[in-house]
Image (cartoon, rainbow, N blue to C red):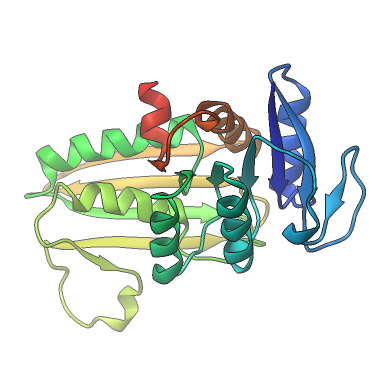
Length: 249
């Protein structure tokens, strides 16, 4: 039984994780942390210094502002951490990677199996098409999402950029009064309604278009991946892990 300390337990993703855990017998939530106040069937703390429960792993679906406190707690208590939050600054990402030299850190901008397959397929397509096809990424999310572009869109772009020479990310095309350059990867964000998550990668060539698309129909797909990551990382040595490690395992 893997005992989870759930950071962001009162949020929508925290509730999705709780529902996923309740459907399984190999995991349990032993306590939660959330800056808001609320009741759950387990103890909920407003900050990490109040946590006394002995969890096996920390599972994070919270806010970038909580990162420092969470990592300090994880290092002090030598607890693996699964970071599913997005919208980190470059300095925060560096801190996550530095922490992974001390404790196991599972870090992914998207915990969906399907999305990670989309990323692998996009890399394969980029190897073949990037020299003669223009590449654009469109991501759509609900109107409550704060960060843009999504962490997943950046994951996709980074994977493609590894296969494309001199890749340049373009986020705001209206500011450019010139023709599109071959080096560009366009990244576009849509926010509206209750869209859970949709990502499309467009490879546009001469007289033909190849499109790869993933649509998440509930938050449960992300919760399931995160819980699987918690089970995966429990006894791992210090290091930085992601969905590719989980898929290979």
